[in-house]
Image (cartoon, rainbow, N blue to C red; front, side, top):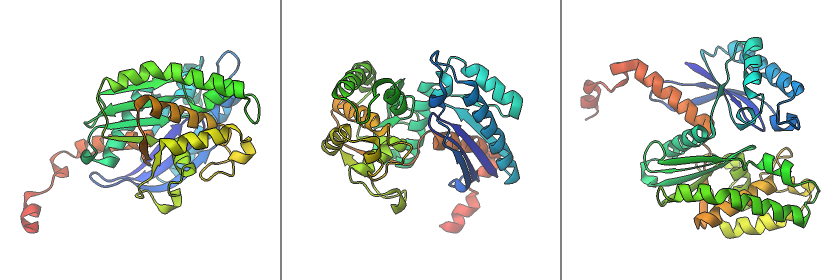
Length: 326
């Protein structure tokens, strides 16, 4: 069947179409996205503005029609921190549903963290042991740890790269006092969350998901995205610390020239680097790797599990087939 997945994030609204079959790997069919930074449409009261609401509604209708035109049979639509933390988030979701017929499911921070971990576990496999996953979004920072299919502990803190940039960085390049205030806030906010995760176990592997970690790994020398998803991409705290200090002195325009940094994310990659650096320091981790699967893939995998369950016994291997292979 063809599944359509609509992801309403803080930085981008993205529709992905995939061909899925029970027991097989999901195959991307088509993609349609809009760089709608909902966090840029927040009022002083923390509400999503009428313009932001209408832009979102328009794209959801466009995505619905795109999916229908490409014969999608199922639509999985969800929204993360930009919606759940807006004062009028529920009203925005109701407006979208009334105008488009599409119901956007609001995912909590802890759910986002747990589902992202679920995807990472599938990507890395059981041989990875206990996994600590870090995910920096535009509005929030998720952390989770575990050794099973679902995490033993998962938390979300309001330390997204976009959120921190808007709150602390007013100048270009950033002033030393802005950097100092940002670093202090990140460390104070992270400490209790890190303690909760550390209490749940010691990781055998530390991974970073999200485009922020993908960009940071590229800045630190990891292989480009064009090298394919199966290339091992590791980076080290020493390199991250060095590059974060360098980015502190750069203008946004100069950051755009760094490898793996898009024009849209150049402004917030500094804050993302500071969050990542601080987290690794608090966890005492020197090396981590970047992996391609995250929240969206976790939701897709959960939907495919339900499809497998719906197939019942027919989804299992026929014993005769096993004897034929023997």
